[in-house]
Amino acid sequence: MEQASVYRRAMAPVAIVVGLIGLAATGLAQTVDWAGPGRFAGYWLGVAFVAAMVALLLIRQQALNSKEDFWSPPTRHVAQAMIPLLTAGLGLGLLEILNQPDARDSIRLTALWIILYGGALHAAGFFMRRGIRLLGWIFVIIGSLCLCFHELEQTPWLNGKHAHLLMGWAFGANNLMYGLYLKLTSEPLDTE
Image 1 (tube, rainbow, N blue to C red):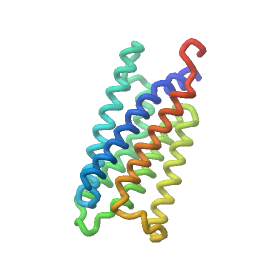
Image 2: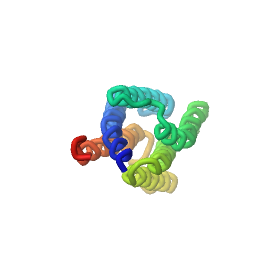
Image 3: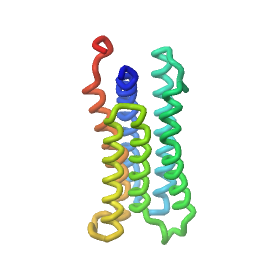
Image 4: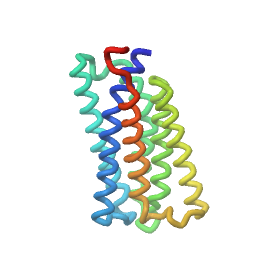
């Protein structure tokens, strides 16, 4: 249980920073008007790479500050649980880039990315407290609903013009809210 509390405290700044990166990327994409499907997958794969590198640097810094190994057995377990689904998301993004411009569908890709990210969080949750598994389920359910509504054309506003906003909400706002929740509810070091 002590290790779960350490993960909870360590995940808060990572989730907050990743959420802020997602929101900033959404704001930039909307400001520069990169709403077209031609740039969508490449742009967000780049954002994901930057967010992953920043998260790894934060985790490394936390390990150095607490004089722990960066690539510890628990960290390896979490990474091994998440990598298959995150790799599938990378593959889908690359396929979208290679697809003909008229065959690209940024909303479908976003929904699939949300589902895969949720699955990755859920898989990582088996090595942490149940909150991350619940967050994973939330992503899976929301991504599935977005995919269904989009495919059934039930929501006219769920179109390519709003794909960046959907990404910002899913990967920016949700991660930020989760990080703030972890930060506000984590126990201080001296009480554990």
